[in-house]
Image 1 (cartoon, rainbow, N blue to C red):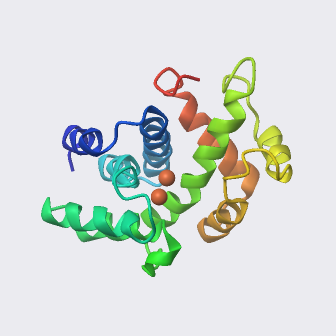
Image 2: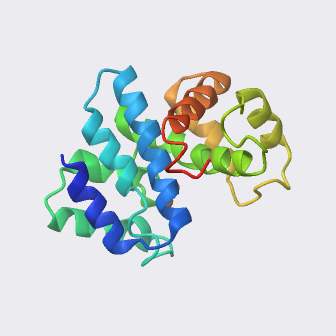
Length: 182
Ligand SMILES: [Fe+2]
Ligand SMILES: [Fe+2]
């Protein structure tokens, strides 16, 4: 698994800065979890980096992530990587049957939500706590496009308490706060 190659593919398909940042955020979370679980960091990072790489070109379900998955197949990406990416979209019908797939699903919407929470704070992500993210999750009008159901289901499937998971992802995103503009 090669991050440089994955990044080149990502940038070929994605020009939107916010979308690129979303990919970097999910990558950072995936990498941190791979480290925690003593898994293949580079592979998990690439899954995060590429999970929405086709979204700008194919924003409609189920084109995203099915079209992207076909491209990844052509490029020789392994099946577990493609299945994990397909699995983040429940409508793909591909079950999240690996730890890697579960972590991707658990981090995807949450990264978007943490990004939204950080952007409205004077000190951005630097002093963001899980408790304030949880509070914002209850405010349905805040970042209304973020699916709360996916976030809670992701925690459930992963088998981690929400507070712990949220704090873990905040800490992972903090490591690349400059790249994220936070
Ligand atoms: Fe997606
Ligand atoms: Fe995503």
